Length: 509
Image 1 (cartoon, helix red, strand yellow):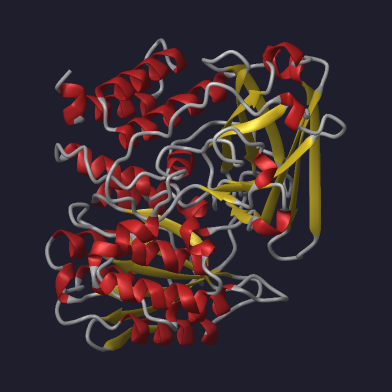
Image 2: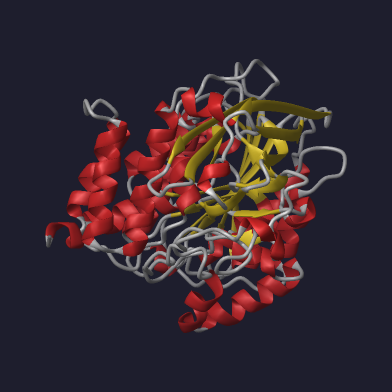
């Protein structure tokens, strides 16, 4: 979502996107940056220190063509150019932990035998695939840094897991569905939309409030303050089964009506979510992001967060719509490539997609002075905290920060030097400010367990190989999978390996 942050206001975001969606040819220029397409090199330019530029972003919306990774610089900045009197402090963002559309989009394309035009945001791959960490105590967060030597001398992989607590019982919910039923939804998209609504129905509890609006040329309210009887409420299931695609597109009318219903039944002690389901074909005008952002922000309580669900199909799909609305709406962005995926996202992983365990999580990383950020696989980082938007963390989930550090001189790395990870956040309902910090020496980190880091390394290698679109990069990803799971026991890594084997470039080697 990070390209949106380069614009000065939500209104300008919507105006520019409306212009570009009217002519698809400009979408690639809007949605990506050179750094985003292949990870990040040091923020100061070819060999410059990180602090010489403002926020470095990484995850633009919908990349339309794979690009080779950026050139590896042989050396970091000269040590003489760095300030050895103080450590380097960076603020990092991995995007909301429940933004994870990119892997499902890539999976659909790969299963169709297409290895080009993939939408690859590496941090969403880290969100989507589960890296297991010990859950925190109720109301708390666990900070788990891990470190291992990387391929080049003086380079180190550093992975940080910020793990929330497991949810004991979710809050009552006010769920407002804003459902695209325009003509372009015909066929597979409307079938997937039905599956999404049925999956949401399966996760309802008695007393949940459900609203539903369909939007095409106009908009119609199908459910207004409906009180659910429990899982698989008959009225919600019937709504899902009867959805039909017909007519034009009027996103604004659907959103306006949806938010009116959501506010009508808003509860300060409830989970208030608006779920927008679409094939991504609508134009976003100048007012929608402002409307969405206003409803997602409440100075006293949690706002009405917008969850975006893309239905595709992946061929020809542009995720610009969902990317901008979920960025403004502070909710999850998922993509369903099948009915089974709808069941996973809104059944098994319902609380991960819909709930919030920690609001406005800000992660601060303090490093010995001789280290620089050589590659960063999150959304953005900066020495200035004001340039990094805090992100939400779901219960039962972890934010994963993956980066490669480079020492300006490998010989001066001291294993007695320390690395500190500090997180600040706000409790979702009480708005109490919290913080936690962990400090470990470089030696302790290098000697510690790296099981999760090795899986993260394999996931990153997979995403970056899809961007590179070369047999060499895909084979490197397969090697990383073998290193992380030598006995072939991790179902997710097995799935990734199977997807790599479907890639035309891998098959051609």
